[in-house]
Image (cartoon, rainbow, N blue to C red; front, side):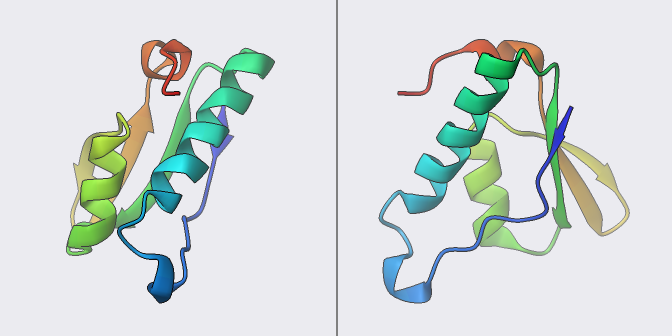
Length: 81
């Protein structure tokens, strides 16, 4: 299982696909290492990161204000390049 704490992209580089590329690289690492699941916690009120995680295949598992986005084995095995 891979846990990543957050994806940070400098404000001057927002909305350029950098976050998606970083997550795609993490998913590729998971495929190469045969990792079964990847996940990341965030606040449910963080709209920008919510959109990023959903757009990269993350599925929300809400628990109060904290939301964990899980990337299933199927999501990790699908090439995102």
